[in-house]
Image (cartoon, rainbow, N blue to C red; front, side, top):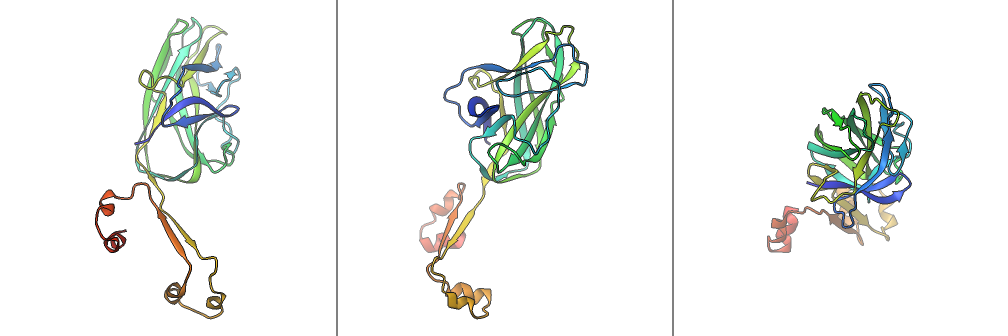
Amino acid sequence: MPKYLLTNEVIATELWKLLETNPSYSEDLTTKARVGKSAVCTYFKFRPAVLVTTAGDFPDISLAKSGWRTDTPLNGTFQAGTWTFKVRLENDTKYAFSVRVAVRLSKSANPDGSGATLIVISESPNVLNLPASAGGSVSDTWTWTAPAVTLTNEYLFAEYRIHIEVAGTSTSCQCSFACDEDPAVADESIETPTFTPAIVETIVAKNFPMTYLAEPLKAKELVSRVSGATITHVAKDYPEKLIKSGKAEELRSKF
């Protein structure tokens, strides 16, 4: 099951990488929200490396994203099952307040996330109580039971927000959204069900005889007459037992 770590590897301004491995981790606390005395039910949307001071929920799904993204497009399906989200917040002041965290997952063929399709907004059922001490932190883990999720040469995007559950008592109330930590110590991540890559079939026939197009032919007859064509099958999870089955003829019959 893939696990995507929230890193501070920059793709673009306010857009960082989701990576399965993070060889150069170093705790990052530059993503912040100053909530002040904001009332209960107020939202603050986190933006990587930005101190957010204005309340606001997730913006329109069609806009470019401010959050985390897979490094490359994905082509395949996350099987139906459980997605697990892990986050950590750290209090920047001595004033306590309480929040609930949510993640918005979306997919888009555009590298900036514009024109995206919503996958889910999953809000944690847990209330996080930021302690009344600067540097005090709280971690959260929650899950989403998902149907199969298919991406067709699309990037996966993740954005995060907090929802005020208990208001702070000072205009200075502020917290940081931690990321890029040593995964052996702290694990800000998204763990998914099994991902099955799509099988890609490519047919190439540069010199397809034009005469075949000039007469009505059934599909079966046309296929039998095609020459100079190459068919390529690609499947990362191609069953190992087929590779060990022996003769090429037997292998083809089992594909």
